[in-house]
Length: 189
Image (cartoon, rainbow, N blue to C red; front, side):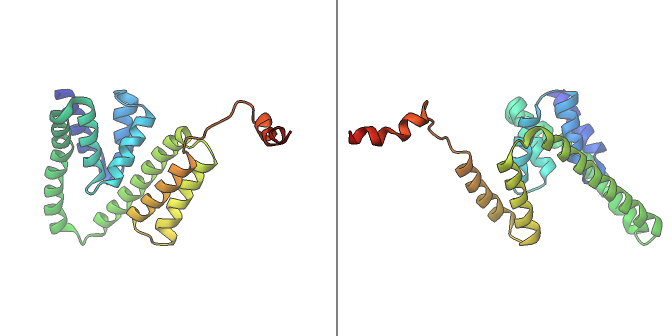
């Protein structure tokens, strides 16, 4: 339990600029090996669909899966405590120095680095999980639905999810389809 709290405390204290997905994957998949990429992607997908902060949702889901309810509480406190302390301090500092150009330049740099971290992480996950035409189609449909057509995220998720269920539904396969295709001819004889 203490290790779980410590891992999320470290992630919460070091994941600046919105690149928390990269830190989460690095800690949970690569270093600790508590999850594989598929499990991580499932947890991340679920945390993205829930209301609230994705990182906090992910900490609660991962903690619950690893240690139950107490694990979820420990992971959530570990994830949120550094942000509470640092955001309070940053808010006070920004209130006193927010109009200085060096502060604005530093924030732009952090945002650019976070974008790069997120892109690198999703590229690594995508290489392992996107395996065919339908996967690529669903990604494209979701991106177009949200960015181009300005649909809400729940509408896109429900629509693309329904299409995915239809595309990946179990299909009954016959052992010898060529015999079945001629069965109606034999039935006439």
